[in-house]
Length: 230
Image (cartoon, rainbow, N blue to C red; front, side, top):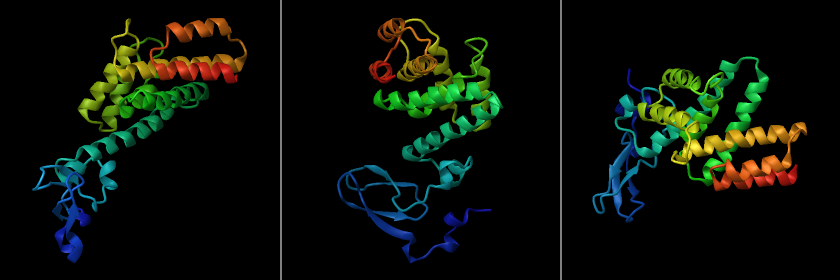
């Protein structure tokens, strides 16, 4: 069965139209089912501005239905995937509300500092949620992460990137990816917030950790703000 939105028998007069190239302003002809077209004047390829990619953003058969997906849609698929990872991990923890609260806190910090550090947010946030499954060992999250991402039909490259990020979080030294640095800092910030809330935090020790353990400038600023406002 063909998707009705892409079946030509449902097309109208407006199913073939022209759109202005965002690069040079030349008019480019589009058919309704074109995912993207290349400008004949400057060669710039851009996404069909009238195409509804709503279902393709989460449908596992999108690439078979629409052909090669444009980079913008691939990014949208991966951004939606991180939300599904969050749901899966909450199911994984069941009624362990303390762990759920901690992982949610880690993801919140990863989201905040990851954007400032220009990290790949699909990778960083997926890793932030999946890192919580690493007990009792630092490698414990890897099989769970792989299983969850494969079940959600994530792209192989994204799975590889998330697993590599989880490995690097526990690596010594500074030669780690921006995503691993963001998640490592987010984990420390979550622990810092929890320590401050319980009132058992040694502020001098926490200040020392901020200077020596946090790997990103955004993470250090966030930690300083947290200590000042607590």
